[in-house]
Length: 187
Image 1 (cartoon, rainbow, N blue to C red):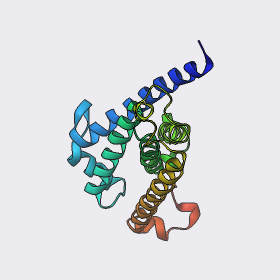
Image 2 (image 1 turned 180 degrees about the vertical axis):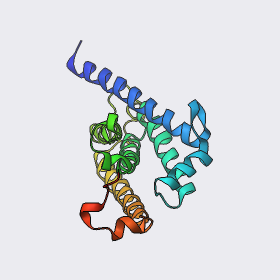
Image 3 (image 1 turned 120 degrees about the vertical axis):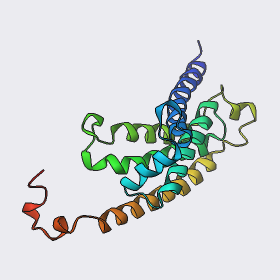
């Protein structure tokens, strides 16, 4: 088997796995499928995690994961799909970042690897076994990757900054007023 064919098959499998996983998680958020909370449950979770406004955050997270995942899986508008996946997972990773890297400790390992996977496919392109290839790569130009990753990366950074401000403004006064050696002493 020729090297380029092997690479195209590998990209197809990678896109299907990452895209399918993201789309499944997104439909949990949007529709409550696969044991998810749907928009209401996701909005409540978003509020608890400090995302404001919570309902809009739930919709954006669900659409980012669902549409980004489906685009990656199909290899359609791959720069946008990959960037949507990367930016959505970067925002999700901000929630897990304080717990460190490993997912077993509540860390950002899972969200981080999905963000990197989305960015990697946005940059590399989907390969020959994709709808983009069938359409002559009209929606998969190199400049599109740079623009999509920059714009959606900036949007993700803004969402993370807004969440961080919301979390800081709702921090318990006892923690804010306590000397540094007493913060977390009872934990």
